[in-house]
Length: 374
Image (cartoon, rainbow, N blue to C red):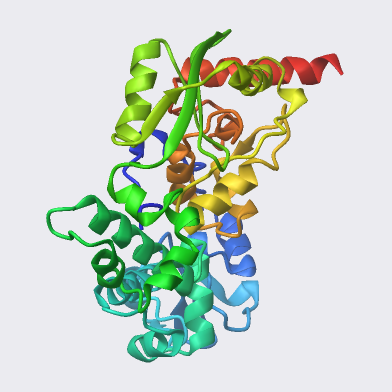
């Protein structure tokens, strides 16, 4: 799924510097907290038991007087300690094992002709359904079922786009793993933004109204389907913005909006110029299940407030999916209305922005200025 494998490296979050655990005090605090972030940085041994453990080991904490710290398993074993059978400190870290497990489950889902249920995936993984569900969601931010559903929808998009290989819309839907075309058509607007036939034709049969205007940040393009606003693009060259929209829907009926659309454009420009006004217009938002969650969370962040990628990941319930969150921000095609510009690096500095770092800084400065006047 593209939210898991986004290539938006330029906008990926920059994590906070990792603790160095250079002192025994810092190491002991990590042991007391069972901090998984310390795994791989050191191990600790317990004199009374003769074993050594990871900092995150769930065993009952030993007395500080009986604990010594070692750079790694080899050092602990040279000192005469054996690895703990519970946390297995001489093997891959728990986070690495979980990541490998989730990767294998994703491969099983991708390779299956029909969507495997949770019991089948759990049996193949050798763990309980509950444990698999919990690990998968902690690692990716979504459930196995949500991942499988999003992958099937992505396959439909790919099959519909490959007209030479899949001449029939029905064949494309069945090839993606749906056991009835009705199930897919029931959610086609959510996953494609239009009917499957229209999507396959590059938007053929769909009417998208658009207008290009000028605002204080340069040229701005606003486009809408009959569902709502599907794109707000910003840049320096109006022609480039029009080409961007055309590339998204090469066969759609792109219509220069008439006078009644000016009110929509005016509201969008008003949001750029005065963020506190908000935007009371429907959006036609298309993306994966995870992207939808991120974009919805972004819309809850008020003007004048900034959050880090790490904070946003926690907000959507996926604290370990910081880079996937950054990828979802980069994939956002509805500028300002879905305020991905309010997300910054963990140290507060500005990261990449689809429509230019300068515009991101200008938007943040404007919102901070508004906050300062209150």
